[in-house]
Length: 120
Image 1 (tube, rainbow, N blue to C red):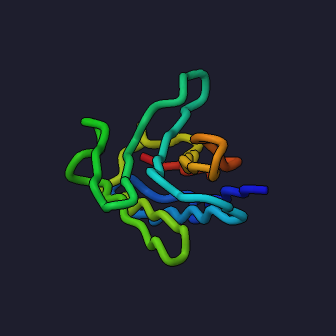
Image 2: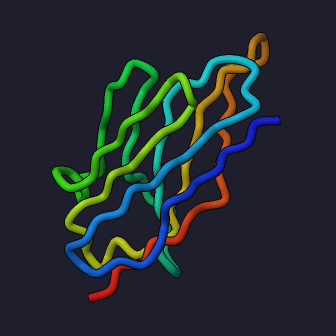
């Protein structure tokens, strides 16, 4: 049973920083890309950043230059370093793990989310 667990959310003032972590466990197969999404109250879930198993990254335009995604393949862990946070970054942040299950294809797994609140 694959589990995805996020941590590191909290309350921070505008201009501050937070570092989110996400661990994927129980994987029988290959862990591929890992992504961060966020969902503000009353809004759809939006893409934030992605990192492939080879370390290639991509970001939403709204976070480029301020957020950095990284991963530790040995620990099946992805991080999201968020700097210069703005109040509009307030949202629940979700981690997504793409897993190739041997002989069964690719599956996406989601965590329960971690709340990030940025005060003005």
